[in-house]
Image 1 (cartoon, rainbow, N blue to C red):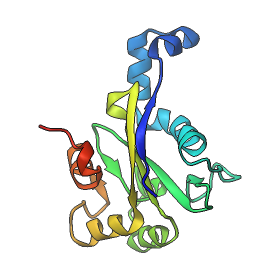
Image 2 (spheres, rainbow, N blue to C red; image 1 turned 30 degrees about the horizontal axis):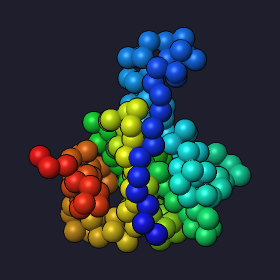
Image 3 (cartoon, one colour; image 1 turned 180 degrees about the horizontal axis):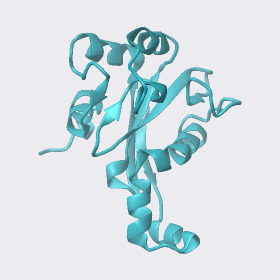
Image 4 (cartoon, rainbow, N blue to C red; image 1 turned 180 degrees about the vertical axis):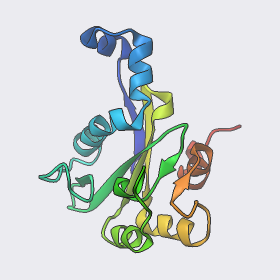
Length: 163
């Protein structure tokens, strides 16, 4: 399944509806913690014609039209993690077995570059490609990658920036 495209928002209309400045709306939605809920829903319905799991606490983000499980990850200026969010943050630790088990049970990741909000490019990377990057040392031991590295290693070659 070739998953790639763009999602767009009207930042001026969002700002009006939220009673905020356009600059504040753009800053707010460039934060992966804020936009992830909306990204998951738009990608699920508009891109994959899929379904959301019954629980927000499910171990994956969405089903595609064929019933395959996917994770959605925001690409930010601070980097992107491929491990579950339960392994990131204060008092949490990376569990390699848990990470690899998760990869065995999902089709892959849909990556969304939110640094360019209100236009957000997205594309997919299979779980097997992520495993390959992990075992070949192309990501940090905790699965974190910089924005540039994620783009260079995962974005379809016909979409790479010409810098």
